[in-house]
Image 1 (cartoon, helix red, strand yellow):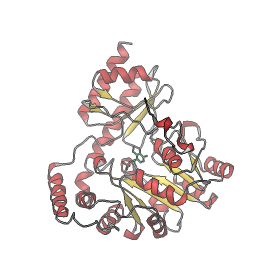
Image 2: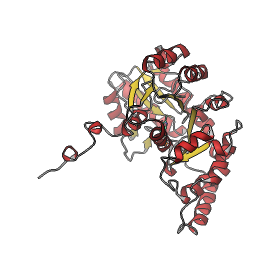
Image 3: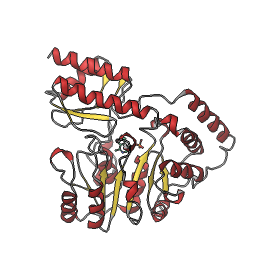
Length: 361
Ligand code: PMP
């Protein structure tokens, strides 16, 4: 007798939903989930391992529930006058977002997001029993202050979600939009800055808006620029009262002592860890140039990936790249695929394969 999910007494609001599902395939060139494809430098890796070994001596004890050393290191890394009391961290920014929604969302509360955007924003919203409401973007995927305010007035959400630069489009987020949104709502304004380090150097981020805005929350991650996706470390900066709210919903000791030790060690080497960011930006700009030369339509991007249109049959091109050992992302946006910028060699492999496919079709 077969038994399936449908036979379980699942929550009604979860019935029929699809889980997060970026394919995980072992291929030589994986450019599908916007990872940093450069491994952690060997000397940094040695220091991280030594720090984990040290932490292991006390692994019989629960970790520092307040991850004090990590909050200090993250605050120092962020700068902008952010203090350790303003920092909160968890196992990836996905968990940070989940805790945020556990505290400020939930049944009867709504979240306004602006698709196409990071798929987990809506998945976590629904998973916490909150209601996801789709706002509209302007032409070209931007969100003007006027558009944001109009959508907030229409939806009256409890939480507004922005993503800057936006995944999957790479579109920059206008800080005037964040300011206008904040003034237009009494709710939480959340800005996901997972890709902030890939913005053009010197561009202001939403961190510059935190002062005097206690309902503004800015999240970051070590998964992208820091090449630390497997370690699972994400964090946010906000008014210290926001961290107090998250203490109500987090599981005690949610960040393992090994994770804390690894992240603090990596942050000691921030400069070296981030040395690849310039290379990645260079490969991203190369992808934009070369795709345009091939006749595709890449969107402007401030991130470590490129969304490009002009793809006749995205699922066919996806499969043909896969046959050549290259995985990109088909997000179901008609005529589009998304590719992460890799090392120079990976990027070359992708561009050569695509050129080949284009010529043979
Ligand atoms: N935010 C955005 C916009 C992302 O694209 C991702 C990962 N793809 C995340 C958050 C999650 O990152 P993590 O949980 O690894 O910190």
